[in-house]
Image 1: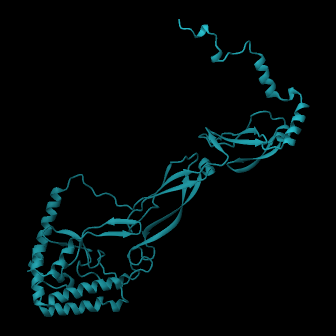
Image 2 (image 1 turned 120 degrees about the horizontal axis):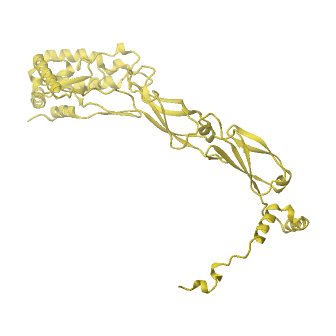
Image 3 (image 1 turned 90 degrees about the vertical axis):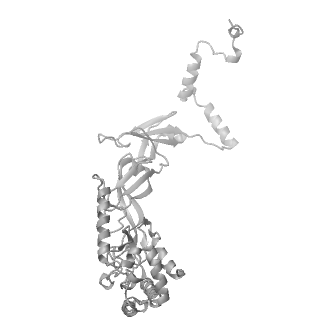
Length: 408
């Protein structure tokens, strides 16, 4: 029978690794958990003395006490201890060799020439399968997509919107290496510094489980990114907003997105714009419209009032005797146009009517209105004159003559 411990220590080489780097999530190649012989760096035909000697040398390098309890050193030391425990016992080693033979027959050959022959064969097959037009695509970081709200004035005249983004990118402390002292991190003896291992008949490269695919064992890691090589970044980016931008517009800032590793082109910042409505102003074509309520006294005497513009509050002088709905146009206070000019600010004057008056106040107004001539109410006078100008009244439909209701 095959030993359970041996089987469990090998079958995990087919596990799939998914690394979460902050907001960067990337699916890597399959992780290869190295067999015990590769962990100790000995041949499959090594005797007990060679195995013991290899274990002692590697223990001095990776013992956690020498590295302040480093998690990577602990993991590597567990690999080494497990390999030594199993290969030092003749019975366990026999069961392990049987399992290894089933999983990877080529490992028991232990001949570098066989590995090279399979590598050449794999290269020939890949070249035969490759299409002539198949070219490697450019590697770049992920685009950042955010939704940002700008105020009405900025969207109207254009300007720079300050957009805060939070993302993960190359650690600025260790420059993505995961360590500020890379010279103190030993080269991985399992993958020979390549970060991946080819094994089996298919020669499919898999991420080295001993060094985590780095090619070097990270014993001294960066305190900023804790060895990930990726750090959380929060920054404010200025995005140019063109004039007359509307809600739903998408703006792109090149080269300020995520950069997972050095040497990789950063992604872009993609900003979806939402324009906050103005509390008073509305846009109609090239013009801006504001409804200005005034009192009876202001309508009679005129005066100075404040009106909003894209540049801020400005004073507007009202003429006297404003009757009904009047519109005042202020030039060059509207929206920008393609020729560089600007539309107008249209101030629609609305005379407000007081509400919730007392009986005494209403009686006072009635007495005052009785003293005012009808000609002082121009809109009322115009309406009554139009009514008198009608030749005959229009009958309501329900009072139409009976003959008109008969069918032919």
